Structure formats: C-alpha cells, structure tokens
Length: 258
Image (cartoon, rainbow, N blue to C red; front, side, top):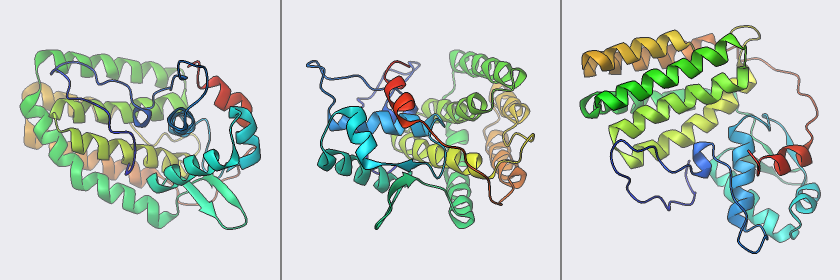
C-alpha cells in the first residue's frame, strides 16, 4: 500500500518479519499513554485489514475523535493517509468510509497481483530453505483449521498471510510491501463480492503451490500462483451486498488488545 511507516530494517533470513500496520498487526500506545497519529492510523488500518470494518462502513469523524480522545484535525490527517492507501474513501459532505471497491477496482487489484506474484513465487522457490517449507506447511494447517471451523474472516486473513509468507521467502522487501497493500485491498474486494457459502480462496490450491516449492519447481509454482489468482477472481460474484451496522467503539478500542 502506498504510504505507510517504512521503518522496517532488513531482517535475518528465516526470521518472521516484525508485524507492521500493513501486516495485519496491532499498534501500541506511546509511553505516556497518549495515542500518536501513527497509533491511530495503525489501529484503523488493522481493523480494516482484519475485516472488522467491512467495505462501506462510515467512519464518523466525531465518533472516532471521541474514541481516541484527540482533535478533529488529527483524525482528518489519519483519514488522509488511509485514503492515500486506497482503503478509505473521502467524499465531500459525506466524510470517510471504508472503501467499497467497484468492479473495475476489483479487477485492477487482481491484475496487479498477477503482474507480481508469479515473479514472487519464482524467486521464493529459489530462496526457500527446508525451514521455509516447514513454515508454509504449518501455515496451511492453520488454514485448514479455520476452514473446518467455517471461520470466514480467519480464512481471508490466513490466505493473505500465506501469500505474504511467500513474498518474505522471496526476500524482496519492496515487492512484499506492495503485495501487502494489494492483499488488504483484495480483502475488501472479497468481503464485498464473495458468494455466500462459496469461499473465494481454496487452501487446496495453496497446497498445490506448496508441493511445487517442495519439488523446487520455480516455474511450476509461478504458474500455479497465477492460476490460483484467476480462480479466486472467477469465484467472486460482482453484485451488491447488504451491510449491517458496525460498532466502531467496540472494534477500535478492542483492536489495541488483540
């Protein structure tokens, strides 16, 4: 996603990345207990990335200002940053809301992912160690568990994290950050257009990708990745969905503890 705090020094190979706001992480308060703009940004970003604030949710300026105990000006600054990432929409006389992607925007997200994820998968296979393969297997076990529990939001989150894990293994930080942006945007696409009772992402397809990694088949992994993204897009229903009311205070205050 375009503009975010890029403080993320290069990590040793094989270590999980420090959890950043754009990696579905939760923020911490400053030492004096007062939330910084970065904390507020991360808390809102996290709630959107974790699908707690679905597409179309109105982000009422006065309510959020009271939740965080800060000025309207600071909330507007945070909204502007979120709008720059594409996950919040600002409209004159209407204020801010979680972006509800149009069909065109949804198609563009998938086109962008296809443009980079074949390369990411290919490079990841070339860099992958036995430990990396083991981490991928462990992640797929968690995906299967979420699937068995019919945990829809958990499946969407874990699916995105699987793709980010592959990008981390590829050891290309720029592509990983770009992909993190696209995955959060895609989560909004899925929440908007996923067909009821028909999960958009199949962990069986992830298993096929893992098998290509285990064989050391870089071209096969790249091909399977593109086919996987095509399949996700094809399973979506680009129609309208009804939305329920959201309790912003419960979600945004609770995200600090998760």
